[in-house]
Length: 265
Image 1 (cartoon, helix red, strand yellow):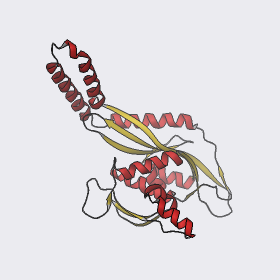
Image 2: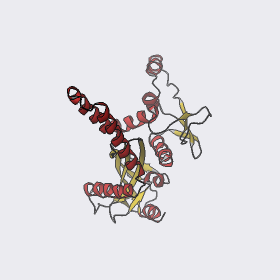
Image 3: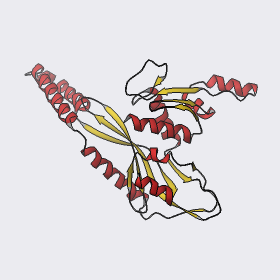
Image 4: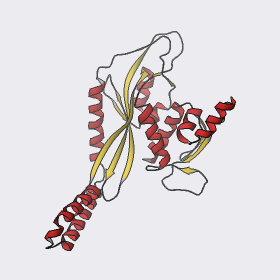
């Protein structure tokens, strides 16, 4: 889900007040803040020196490419499994596991804000071929409407950690705990609709590897313990399974107009 990854990165950098200088469908140039420079660029001596001489310092920029394949364009290829993306996931887990944000409003009219539970979930596919995908899912906690690619929808709105004057929140009918269960059920159903050929391929590969082991260790009683350990390693590596991991989640309070726009899109 490279499109989702691109949108996810855009949201990550903008939420952390970085400037998106240029952007296309698969490329982006990001001017980092000092905070993210210290998190991602590994320049502790530079910032220590800037602080020592009393200077502000200049954060670096990132030139990223989220294409499915590496290109010869002098940009950093960021993809599932890349060290840069793992840095970002680690930062999110350490600092922004759960958040509450409010849509900015203006004027002096009282404006109700509707609650959405938003989750970004990493799905790990384990088996003969390993891969990952990110799913961003939003649940409207008043009417139960579910939306995929939620981070992309949220890009259209300006969010803040503080609620604007004259705005007020509507209490959710669906409690967040119940909301998480609905989201996981929705995701599980989506995964069941996917092509499961990889499952059969992984099972076949596991059977063939175990048969090969049995052949080599046939009638060797003294190697029985080694055989069982090798089978365990093969099973851990090849047995097909899906693991779900929450990257982060939050309550996003949106105006009725914005909520309806997301639902209709």
